[in-house]
Structures are given as structure tokens and as C-alpha cells.
Length: 264
Image (cartoon, rainbow, N blue to C red; front, top):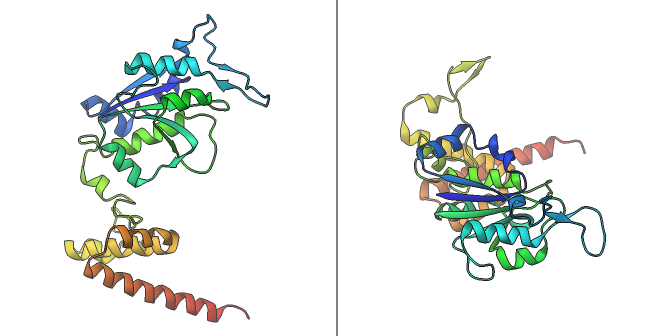
């Protein structure tokens, strides 16, 4: 899979892409990443890619022409025509990145990521070049570089041969719509805290049920809205529904007990 990243600060990515899983993916050829400095496509000797906003106000705005010229040159298309791959602008105004979008992007062979900076990019460049906008959440970053790094890592995990164990991604939080169950490693007893006996039993069926139960319990407590989505989009099996009903009763009883014991 190919990622082309357009940025004013290509050196930012030396750290994120130079170690761990992404480095492994790059080394084995499962992914490739092109870093393109938008300043290289400016037409003045000072390589100035930004200017003051029309209408006044604080901050600077990235110019439309260097952005469009960079995209045209690298992706080999004319602005206004259909680009050869999705061009995603990392923006707080975009759709919020989630597991479903990550899986959607992981099916593609080529993605271009456009990193804004300062107060953003001239709207005309966005209108004629960008095919999608994605946000990490309801907050503002200094630039789109960190968001691009997050997107590349999250998508790359689902590209074959990037992870050492392909089952790892399938067991992560959100892979079944729920949060991941707690995980443990050696030693089995640590500071008077023991690993749950089920995980030591070697009984794969019971371990699967335990992990589902504890992941569901954690989701019901921390992100209850995800349970409703999972029930609607990923129908539970009979044994999973049974565990869900048991947890509903258990959590209700704890809630009632807490209410009875509270002052007043």
C-alpha cells in the first residue's frame, strides 16, 4: 500500500516512521511512504507557502497554488479532474476517524494525505483537490502531521505482512465493535495479584468466552454507546447474548446496591 504525504514539515515523520511496526512494514515492502515538501512547489526564491488571510485575523493561511502544484506533480493529474487516488485533508472539520473508516481505507492501494498548518489551507485548493476530510476528534492540532502519522499507523495495521502476527489486529479494541478485554503476561502472580484462572486453563472455548465477557463488561461501563452499535451492526450469537443479559443483571444489581448505600 502506498501513502503520499504532502506537508510543510517532512522531517516530522522521521521519528514515527523510523521505528517499530511501520519500519517493519516499510522494510518488508508491505507499505511505502512518500514525503513531499509543499515548499518545493512554491514559485518564489523564499519558498513561501503561506500568506495573511483576506478579511484580516490572526495567523497565516497556506496558499492554494503550491498545494495544487504539489498534488498535480506527484500524483500526475490535473487539478479539477479525478485524482488517481483519494486525497485526504487532515482537518478538524472532517469525519472522525474510527475503526470502520480505518478498515475502509485499508482496502485501498494508494492514499494521499494533505497536512494543513497555521490557520489551514486556502479553501479553493480544498474544493478542487480534496476528496475527503478526516479528523482525529473534536480538538485542534498545530498541524496535520501528527494526524497523518496516526492515520498511516492505524491503516497499516490491516495491510498484510505489516504486523508480525496477523491475528493481533483482529483482537484489538473495536475489531468486534467493543473494547478489548484486559490482558496479562508472566508472572502469573505479581504483587499478590493473580491472573484470572480461566486464562491459565488452556481451555480455548472458555478463554474466548472470558475475553468476550470482560471486553463487553468494560465497554458497558466505559463506552455504553458502542454496545448498542455492536448489537445493531454485528448481531451477537446466542451465547454472547446470554453473557450480555447476565452482565446487564449484574451491573444493575451493583448500581442498585450503590444507590441504596448512598447517603440520603
